Length: 163
Length: 467
Image (cartoon, rainbow over all chains, first blue to last red; front, side):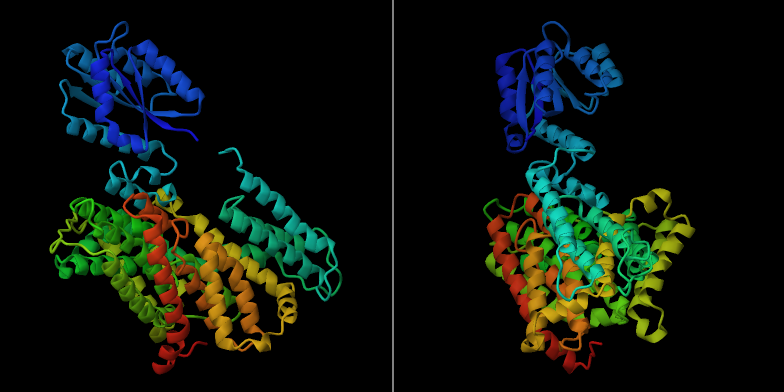
């Protein structure tokens, strides 16, 4: 059985753990994978995908060692295989330029500033995952209990075959 | 879309081929060659619809194809002289059977209601008089769900109403049992409500269509007369079961439904055609226009006025119609091949009292539909049920046979897999399999008793003739 993953790309271990902890409510249905930089993230994604798993959302820090988070997200957007992944930048240090590039070139779905608020983060991730499910999942039913239930019901109302 | 077949699918396919071929290879006493062929097709259909080795609608298409190549005048392997043959067009024609046109009319109305959010705004308006007491809100939700599912698919109705219910239960304490009660009330009411009209759910269409092929026409109003009073009693009983088993300590609940009536010209066209169609369906005894002809009115008007375009036409759940067509085609095959006479001859039916047989058909439909698709169960049982009922040897009204099988199929709701509404409600995570099993079984049994035992008495009282 394949799993759907949330990928967190963050170089500082404490921050990474804190994000993963705040995403705990989603683990009833999704699995969380963490990476410390872009290269590590690519490797993790390749491994997940070769195991038949999917990545639904990437939450990336901007200031990573090596390739910047923004560039990583742009690369994801340019690859047809990873284009459908929801992209969230979670950062305190992205400049004006980088932010604009992320929006224009990576089709950034959300920008969260550090320090983040757990509840706010959860609501953003819930919205983005709901969007991903509506667009990509064969059935919306497995996700109703953890994501935006009423919105998924609306989808079902319009596309009853997604049950 | 070629996904890896599951073991059940592989097994199902192998069993289906065996089921198809064996009756043709062995010599069955007193059964004609074409009867043997249809027996094979029927047994194959049983295997495929139970295992879902291929999609339900694909099995339906396969049945039509096999009937054409096995027993029609286009049969590939010629039939012995004297064996009955049917013109092949009759089998293709099931794909445009009048009852499917009736159903298509229902789809158009439902799609339109969805497109202009008529369902949601109606729910908002209709729920208002029920106030804010939790128990009366549950009753309101159930009545509205049932009425919607008389005209919309049970699946779409469930999704619409759960979108209303989920925000409400989010305001309740996680330990409040009423959360489960309110979520449960939606699929239960959708399943029960589907009984109400010929377009309520596919098994009803299979019954009406197969009866029409046997020369017995059931009007829309007639079906409603038979079904709606009992359906409403069952709904109230189900409501009582739910509010008793899932009490709350809240005195007040707030239901907020967003949206207002769409006042665009297209929406007005929809409202008008909706009212006209339903009005004509209900008044058939006065004007005599057959419900399937009326059902084509929304198709013509909504397409003609451009309210629906080609995309809307493509979005219709055609596969549901094909599944129903498969059941009707199976019925034609059973009758035209002489298999029906053979089935009747196998058992001395005189020993069965008429009431027992009708009740048994409903119960069989109920049990089968609990584990397989309601439509598939009706597709398999209605040809058998009508065969028995139409035989002079058996004293059961054919209408009762068809009606009870359709009702029995709708009463199956004890498992998450029993019906799509159940699966959808179960996905919300607030109800357990046990909740569903208890309430679903209670409502199923009450419904069965009500329709089989109270029904005939009630119809007699109001002077409603079955046939």
